[in-house]
Length: 327
Length: 262
Image (cartoon, rainbow over all chains, first blue to last red; front, top):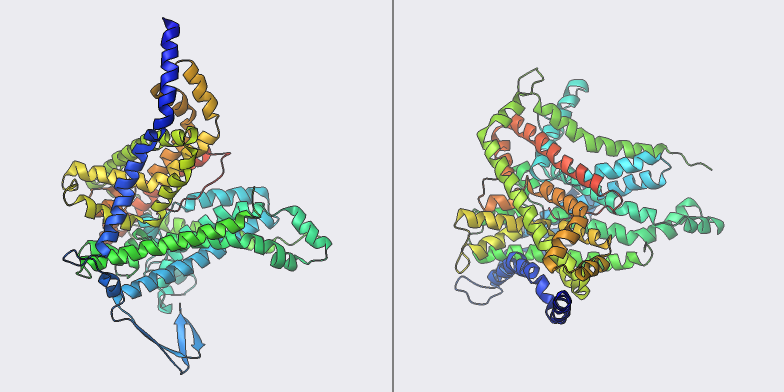
């Protein structure tokens, strides 16, 4: 009795399991289809339809309506974050609200990827290779793990409380150093303020990713290059930096996407007045802007395309960095 | 030759300032509701407000549902892929990547469009909207949760344990409940804490599904009550960081991973 039961319980299901094994992952893929793929696909479909439901590319064309770009052969000046530099030509650029929002989002994304990326790299470098005591490294990693989760609404409030008109640092500088931050034109609700705020959650991610990469630099490589007569700078220029460059760039791309898709921090900081691409979509969903649903879907799909392209670039770089840093 | 450690120390000091100044600033600001006085009044106002209690409870319950749904969805899948369908790994990876490519604001945009019109118009009912919120959160926390479970599965011998249980006569449900889940306890707990930290103050999805959640309440308070909202920042930060702290403590020995959905 016992034996037959065991036999029948073991062998037939085994045969069944092989052919129907895929059934075990069906719930997961149903979830993915219903709550990830279907929502994205609907936006995609909406973006290529006009109001009557006909197939059109007009929505994407509409994103660029009124945008012109001309180069005129006359010298001019350009300014970025208050730094003015000369240009050998004049750019005659007429934009619309959508393209401006994308440009602003990309600007913030690129700048915070650079500031967060470089600052994070320098911190990781100091902690791993700077000859500091061991506890610095573990403290840095712990703080980074924690700080990378400090984002969204609370982060915006923290920066207003620190650098706002009545913020901690503003008041400190005014009372003890007789220096009025807001007389310099600074405001926490500005591009610079937004960049400072975003960098707070950007640099810890760089620290967390690049620390293992720096650990992966083998001591033998340094010794080999020193034996061949290379100086420290030459070792970095020709050996170490080329090896970590792909993972450095790859992480910066992730940081770019991180900033490009963020909305809560910017919304809480500026009350939705700062026209980033995400804020544009935010207001579109609320029905405050554009007045054209198809155009709104096109703007959203445009963001998905930017994110997908950045991810593809990331994977390409990832493949390159794995060549040397395989652990 | 010993290199100077001055430059590294300066860098670490700058990092230290950048990390702590906003925290000190926030703490200081939250204590200054009454002029020229250090007071906990702002905290008292927040904690006794009914809106705070309601929205916080709501988000807390939704976070628990998210953790439960995420665990039940992801653990069997990850186990099954590990044991029987390793060739599906790239497909799972693709789904995980989708959550990066589709930021929360785009995801909720799509969710509204799909689920507010027939045949799937479940957004109209309260229960339906709560359900969509939890599903959105599961999607958001999916990469972290999947990675956590996957790491846990790698750390144990899934095949041997499964075969041992099978030869003792256990069915699939028993194997999952009595063998796999207990062995994944640490991984699941750390996934749960990370999910909680991400979900409790979430703003974007909750706002557009018009849920009475903690994130939108916080953002709302910020426009009218600066001191109370900074007190709330300190409260929500302490909570989030306690979660991350527990998670880092649980996850000691496993490689630190990064999280890019926001």
